[in-house]
Amino acid sequence: MENRLSRSEEVLVFSGKGEVYSYTIVQVAPENFEFLVPYALALIKLDEGNLITATLTDVDVNEVYIGMKVEMVTRKLSEDGDSGLITYGYKFRPINL
Image (tube, rainbow, N blue to C red):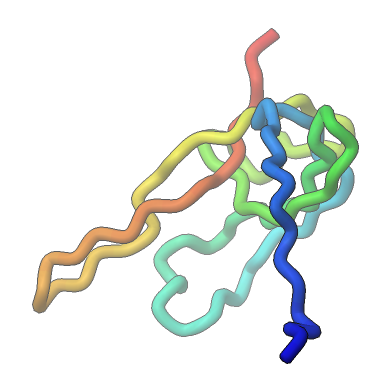
């Protein structure tokens, strides 16, 4: 039987650098993220041309602007108090040129 769902075998490598394509400042956060407000949620245009959604970090939300050069960083996203499980993920921070 033929599998109608095919998987891409192509490996894509990105530099992790790009610029803010668009953004919004979140004032009312989803449950369990209230401690982060206000925070910037951005659409990042990577140097390779792809678009990715990410939270901005290490920046004052009043200083975010379209065209701001950014780079991907790994940050702690959450910690489960009962099990101690820590979840890490990516965010983007400004590049100091």
